[in-house]
Length: 159
Length: 209
Image 1 (cartoon, each protein chain N blue to C red):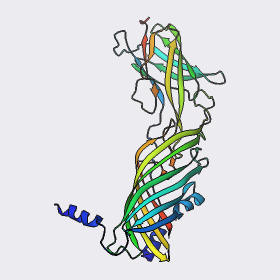
Image 2: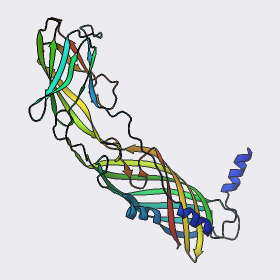
Image 3: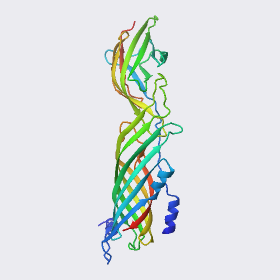
Image 4: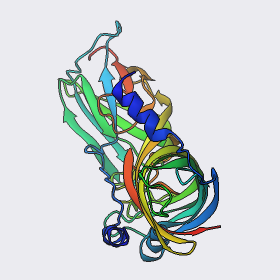
């Protein structure tokens, strides 16, 4: 019994396994809809940018055409993101819309072996309504789940 | 009656002999958890009080203090700390045929609980990649708790007089857990590194009293 006890003590250990999530992308998904709440295709050219801490512009989305959805990054810890939507029609007429997204930011931790990220809860959204007719929050929770549509937009009638 | 049920009944039956039913108490300390505490980033100090019923049944209360102090990870830069007391309560069954020799072979069950607070700092996330604003964070005293169960298999050998040495191997399974707002806790006092289940061991110095 004593020999067995010593042998087992030598190999005494504990074990566990930690797996980091495969997908750690946290982004906001936008869906484009018409007045009947049907999926709509934006035939105009759409670009989106914002302003960095130092005041320079950062392009978040560049010249998308014939899109029904859009995925944009979200700031880690700013209480409100300010986005500029640039909508250019086929006659090169440009409409600029400012969109304000208020949110709560929640640090998200899995393990010391996995990089930490931020999850978000969208609390309010508004725009200048120049090219955007309606914009609202569909699902406020922004996490690793890339399949969720968070915001819906209806653009005004094409130029 | 089915043969297995008969076997189980025989297995659990108190033997009729001249040995008294109440055989005393034993106290023990775990050396594996203490060694982990001193050699690694986490571990626990743990002691137990055990009742000996006819050298067959051993109701047991285990109490401990678990602690993790993980300094900034080389890759992720994350630092993590948590510390709290915990307890387990359950019983062991001596499955040796000759139960009064002083040596024991155990199987047992435990229910365990801890309530603890976690500190996490974000490490290498220094700034937002698009907006360039500061993105470090420090979570302080995030309240968390966990209930879990353990299946125990162990040996206990009589060394000299009231002194026994023993080890146990444990399979741990979470019953329920509250990880607060931060996502997932990493180390749970008394349970170990967080996962749906983990294996663990103890090595105990036991004194009959």
